[in-house]
Length: 249
Image 1 (tube, one colour):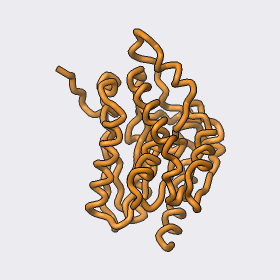
Image 2 (cartoon, helix red, strand yellow):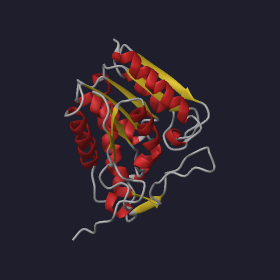
Image 3 (tube, rainbow, N blue to C red):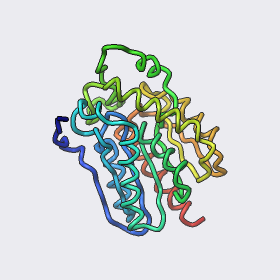
Image 4 (tube, rainbow, N blue to C red):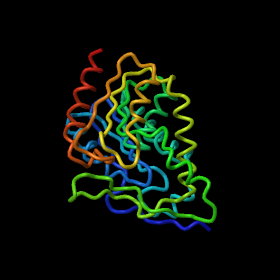
């Protein structure tokens, strides 16, 4: 029998009902909704309807994450999308790290998505490939909380399941292969210094998607978890401006 764990305080999904424009927000690999909540609250304050799902196996215990697959994570974000579809006419998608990968997946799968805003999205991490071949090792060290601000900590797992690394590798490969399917507008954020996802991922995404309207914005004062870092206000400000521009097109 699989053990179930309670959801950690701060890792709960969040929902804000506003106008007919919806914003779907995804957190990252081994992380939680805590990393994206400030963005969600800012977008809700601007009047938008916001959904921040908790990806299955996240925000509880790393042993629970070990039991999930990338299909489960996709299903979690799709549930959020359906929740927004019931309430909104227009949907934007944004996400951090693997949340950015899922953002791209959604644009590849659902052509009605208005635009995407990936933040330090992952489609290729060579360091992870070697992890997939490990035998007899279940857990690795944590990869969370890569933040420049010393006083800020990400609510993320203290261990990384090897099985989960294998799952994200499969997801990244799939999403990377389908990047040319993305033709909707894209605002791509990339931290200049990132110790989890190599910054060239965002440049690769910008090159491979077929969107006519695509912008690559470099964040100079944040590490990987930019949504909790020094450039948080820039991400919020530029995202709100981008959404406003797309709505009048």
